[in-house]
Image (cartoon, rainbow, N blue to C red; front, side):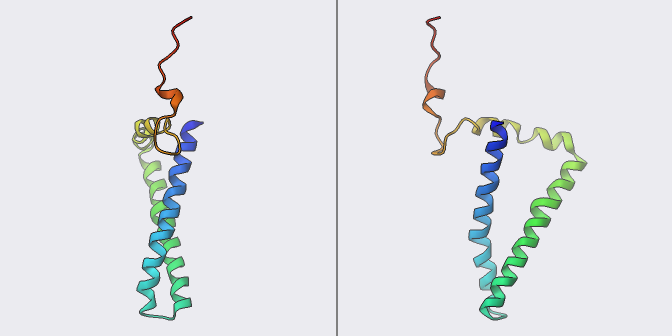
Length: 102
């Protein structure tokens, strides 16, 4: 269950970054060609299209074609980061030595 949470945090962070960086970039590009309101719409359409093709369809096609290889690739990285807390540091319980009094 911890792995799913780790992956979801990464997906959410990438989505926010994609919107924060991509939409203004495309909006400025299209603003030279069309009106401001139209450029915002075009930027949204282009960003959505790129996300669906590059972020959804292509990875799924690769995963279906090479399922075992794709499944093994991120395992170690996700296991390593699933122990980090929101600040990116190990929680106190993870750094404390085990109790050996029993």
